[in-house]
Image (cartoon, rainbow, N blue to C red):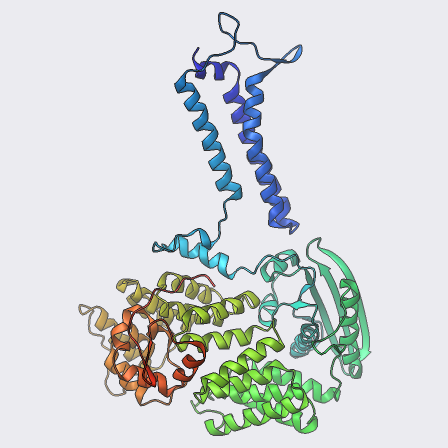
Length: 624
């Protein structure tokens, strides 16, 4: 008997098609429902597994039984002798192949892992592979979120819109208070506050930040009266666990912070204990001084010369009025570290003054409260600037130990490690920073730069575009140019540079970029605006990408450096690293001491009392 005819008679094909359509529809509905209820991934995987296993069962039942007006009966054979259907060898092979195909498809859909580990490390990943690795690498590790929380920027409900800094400041103070609790994992301020002004549903915010609970609220301030409204939401159910409004005088703002933190602790059944075993409580200082502190901190983050000058002035007033206020000393130390230029291109204070003041306030804060991780961030950066890489590494590591959920120590140490050639370790630190702060464009761009040094320009391109999406346009464009050059895409690099020329840049910078275009495309028309009246303002990272090694090494040899661009560690630049000037440069910035502590890069070898480089190495894997 012909097997295919018998399968058709017994309606096996019809049942299979109907089952597939019904299963697909059920999977779509389940996916929609589970996504909006923040259900864990294993629920959907279990549904898909059941549907996949049910398919062969449905086919077997269709073969064995038929539905008649008299009910369900076993299907009778059509063999002339009334016996069972006899399968030929070919038919048997066909059935075995069908079962095998069903099994393989089910395994691939449901059971096979789809993370970066499934990509063969022996092959060169294409753009699609890189995008998959990116999405899997930076996505926070799934967590049941039992004690994870995000504090969103509080809405300013005051009549005066200029009080927005106060509303955000109160939210940040509560965030800092909760971050000091050992039993809580708190999303970073940068990422949590990135949702300010956006009408994003709480479950979506929670998924983006990998938290279970979200605190949102508002602040209304009028004179010395303050109204703070806060509500704690379980993102898994989108249900309010707790909500309250506080009407107090400004003097009681610290008590409000403690009460909100206490209510959260009760709702989540978490003790508000810090690393020292003490109950975490808000600091209490003069309310007017505290208000100036919040405003100065907000100005500092604007990163303009005028705003930072005013922030410095206000912070000095704060520490003079409240000399025991440790966090104010930390913020003032960070302000001196930044020491950005004013509108005339002049630093706010001389560099030597900035460093000494930053260290002074960090040391003062350490005497007052040695458990503040910001102290070691300041001291670590100062040691890094002073080319003491070992001391810098130790400070960054201590900051991580003091505040494991603070992204900046991973951010800064990752950059240090990449610049010193320890690309794989640096990428691991930056990956952790991305997990903790997934909305920070600077971390994406630092990771992209490190991966150019690790010979993964595909991933660097994807990360740069992510940084571009998050608003870091000028820096991202430069890294994208270098990624395209590393991939051999000169036309794409020229197009990007032309876009940079259309932006707001100095004449010196524009002349340099036009020179780069002419070097990449000798047939490009001579620009009428070309001028030699002012020397070009070179981008040394781009000079490196263009393989201009002499210019690069000579320029850096005469420059007071504390780091080199991680791009120097690309396999493409092995010849440059064999130049004796390169190890001399690395010794100058203190890399040798760090290598003696942690081991040298794969590209470098011990050579007497020093090291030589340029021996070649394997490209760095994208995954953390």
